[in-house]
Image 1: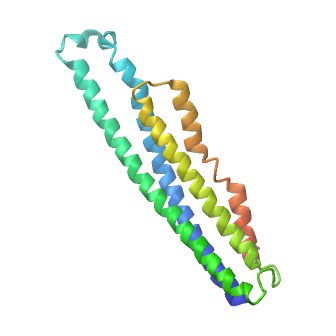
Image 2: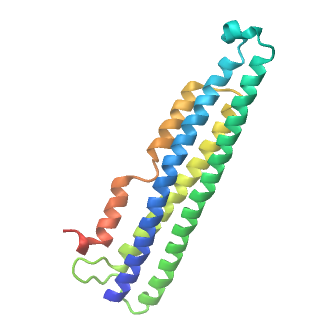
Image 3: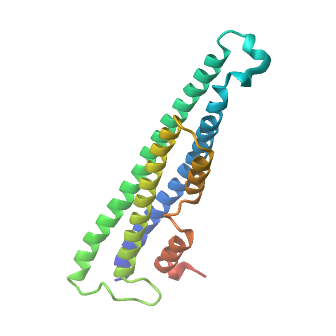
Length: 195
């Protein structure tokens, strides 16, 4: 049974690596989002001819500034889409870990050991539930991020500072991945390592 639990713990170690990758992607995602939302907030002002003061005498300055900012915004949105692809890779890894966990459980359920515990080690049910929760959390967060990216693209045409601020809270908070719940899962799985 201990060998089986070690297999599960290996899966969770891989999951932890994916979560570290996710966190690194999250830092990039937040930075890209903030930069893109800053440009979106400035676009309206940039299109106001009165905003250029003495620079209005430079022919085409408004168009040049707006075009440059739109190019930068397009680049940021493209980078955000690339980060989304990397987030999706993490989700797929969690899905695979969960699927592999289901197969492991099937093997062990025939031996009636899914609820068996040895000391503080988790049972197979704990392990599978943990992987399932991690997969669901990351998949839900991915879908939220995907929706945010879609909304952000729409806000280019009709910017709203209130909407951008609300989106920023969602981007930073990652509401679908509560850190305390994640920590609890890892505490259960690696209980014997906690000193």
